[in-house]
Amino acid sequence: MNHKRVVITGMGTVNPLGHNVEEMWSGMLNSKLAPSPIELFDASTYPTTFAAQVKDFDFTAQVGAESAEKHKHAGRHGRFALGAARQAWDQSGLESCDTLDRSRMGVYLGSGEGNLDFGNFFALLIDAWKDGKIDSNIWPKLAYDRMDLYLEVEQESNMVVSHIAAEFDACGPGYNVLTACAASTQAIGEAFMQIRHGDTDVLITGGAHSMIHPLGITGFNRLTALSVRNDDIATSSRPFDLTRDGFVIGEGASILIMESYEHAKNRGAKMLAEIIGYGSSADAYRITDQDPEGDGAASSMRAALADAGVKTEDISYISAHGTGTKQNDQVETRAVKAVFGERAYKVPMSSVKSMMGHLIAAAGATELITCILALRDQVLPPTVNQISADPDCDIDYVPNVPRKSEVKVCLSNSFGFGGQNNSLILKAAD
Image (tube, rainbow, N blue to C red; front, side, top):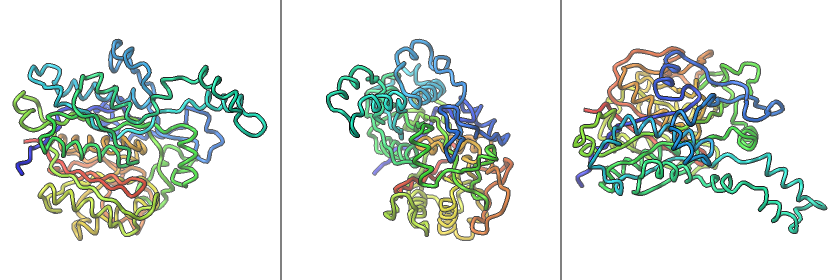
């Protein structure tokens, strides 16, 4: 089959390190640390009192007054996504493309659920609670009168897809995937496959998520997945370090414009990078634990390499999933060694989650953008907070400071709860 080449022509982000791509990249190259005490709700009595939050985000300034009014009911993560999408769209130059067939332009995201209206919901529960149960005679009227219809609708994880499709008149296919921390990498990979097979010409892809709310923090605390380093918040995210004690939850959105090479070339677009391979696998092990031998993660990387038609010797840099949990970092290191052999010690691999926290469904798309920037500037972002060496994590994690390096081909990994593994390979655009 004659596969089409697939390129990226636009990128945008709103995340804890910056409200656009260059702000984020500057933060990374200056080893900026995003974790801070939670401000979105009172978390003072929680085991974890901090997160990596998006602060001072001006939705109207990002998208314009008309669009802000049009999408005024969008959830927190939806607003981040619309801001990031506007950046990517403007960079792509598609607005001025007279030949754009919007029926062949779609949206494919890895987007999480919307923010819950906890205060109102709990007040309703209390008011309807009679004799140890919800009074069915009271609840319907209270719920009908006092619950926000739009907040209920925005709980559907595909609502962000709908907002973006409406904003840019994307009349082609609209998809959303929610495979936990691997979601946006999977969305990009499957968008890549759609274009490569000729099903669409353009896809707006990436991810969005915001779980910094009572349920999100409680759930991850109960799983013992979050760092509880409340006495040293700034350096609490420590991927691959011996003293790591869990990840730092973050939030945000990253969006990319992906096109067939022919479509981008014909309209004279500037191509930022080319996606050349995608691999996916399932651990089929446990709901929250990874396969301890890293077989699933290794399988995903091998599949991406085979799909791209490149060898391990061709990979210049690995963008690690690197969450900072004990198990993830050991398993990922083990998987990289299984795939790369002795070359694992020569290929630099870093985790930007050490600075920006874990953006959950939006993490993979954000990390792919850092790969594009590494290709552009020939600089590798660091894994900060490397304090004590872990004998089980003993390869080159680009410790603490960025590094000038020749970067030609990047591998970006995302591994999610439930054993979902996704890997992408990209190179600089010709």
